[in-house]
Structure formats: structure tokens, C-alpha cells
Length: 187
Image (cartoon, rainbow, N blue to C red; front, top):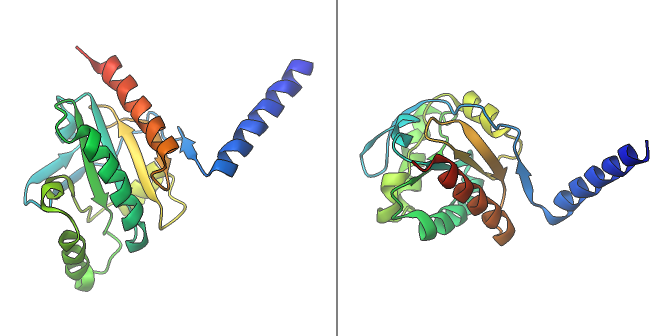
């Protein structure tokens, strides 16, 4: 009976540590498959997810649901690009979810996002114009201004997720998941 109590205390302390450090890393979506995306990147390239992940070991999706999430999304994308821009086995995309933006202002919103996106990053930015509910479900959406990250396998199955700021600790956890999946998916 004492070991059960120690296990409960250990879990409680671990949860408290995560809350105090602000590191929200969860595996709630593990095993779930991302919604399909049939879109066009800001570089005018057709992107179909999860099909675009075929032939890759890992996919990293950085997702934003609001204008307020842009800073966090950009922070994550900058770190990811530094490590994986030239990778042949890791695909990463930024997915601004604009499905909930009314049609009459959507063009203005997209032009604003595109104008703030460096040209070299534009092939990886794919606005999502439908199925907002599906993306909110897979990310376990809760905070409009957070960035949401999913690490997925080459079939689009979620392996790991986090949300929030791109802290060094959170990025180290992301890299660990990516490297682990690269090893597991290696031929």
C-alpha cells in the first residue's frame, strides 16, 4: 500500500513541476491521425498532408490558431529550421489555421501572414482553410494564442505534442522525440 502512495506523490510532484516550469508536454494525442490537408503553400506549391510525409521518417507540424500565436509559431519555426531545413528525413510545416476567419477578410489575413514570412520559409507555410474542429481536437486546443506542435510519423500519426513558447527545455524535448522517431523509422 505504501508504494501506491509513493507513486501517487511522485506523479503529483511531476505534474506540479510541469505546471511550475510552464512546460506543457503531453502525449494525449499519441496514435491519433492528423486531419487531411489539401492546400497551397505561400510559395504556391501544392501540399497534401499526410501524403507529403511519405518517404520521410518524421513530420513536425507547428500550428497557430490566432494572430496572437504568431510570435510563438515563428519562434518554434526558427529553431526547427536551424536544425532541419536541409534534412531529407524530417519534414516540417507551419499551419496557420484560418478556417474560422470569415471569407470576406481571409484574403487580408493571409496576405498579412505571407508578408511577414521570409521567402525561404514560404514553401513550408500552408494555410488550413477547413476542418478547424479537427485540428482543435488533435491538438487538444485550449489557448488561442499558443503555438501547438505535433511530431508525427510518415503516416500522419501523432507521436508527441506540446504547446506554448519555444523554450530551450521544450525544444530539447522536441528534438529528443524527433531523433527517437528517426531511429525507429530508419530503414
